[in-house]
Image: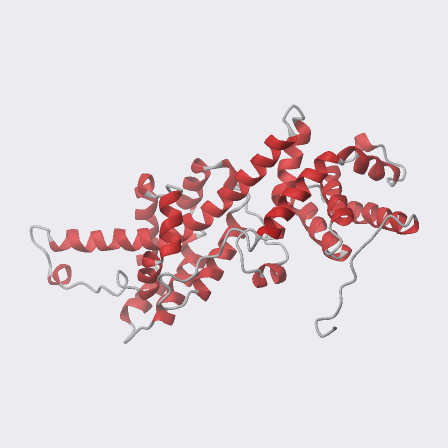
Length: 333
């Protein structure tokens, strides 16, 4: 599985939703690339694939959280089986139940929003019992587990932090989990690390007594975010020829055919955003697509794309074709 380097964490941390605009941009680059390589598809079909891909990413978010409850349930079954052995030991009959009674895991298992989504989308680890077993064994063998189980006392905060540490150090580094996810969905190849950042954030911010509260991040914050994804992708297709001609006219001493195709795709989407979303500062757009170029294109792509887009922005300004909303300070009236 190709692990994606986390992009712009300062933006990600403050956005209270799962599908943020960083992820929308990445998915749009991937799906636009595929569309332009296979232009027989309609724009409607390509857009449906974009939202299907985003939905799959949201499924992955829930599946990773589900590991907490499923590993806990597996541990509970292990303890119960030990009690019913032919010759149980005193430890089998009186086990340490702190792990299976972890307060965070219990709250998550009872969270209504989480359970409804899992049920409606038929998400499960039932077919991956070997993966669950291996993850549990890795946890039990860890020094964090020993420390947690032998501590004189615990609390909801301690229980929650225990799972956050386990996720960071043992679950997301598991080769068994990586293989299991690769088999389930091709859409998750580049999603893992960015989704993990949201899972860790969810665990960290999970409050006690959140059985029915919105502890789980929504897919989109509101209709505007969903509209951003749709508009960005659709306009990039509809005005693609216009934007590629603009790109070509600003590539000095280069034939468009010699430019990496991924660079063209990234610049096409960047221009779509620059020219059609006046509330987003140019610097934000440029920074985001340059970061994408660093992870998805050639070594020199980020510098090349930055130079070309900078030339285009200056040209649009000189031709009075460039309009951006004035962003006032927060204390302005």
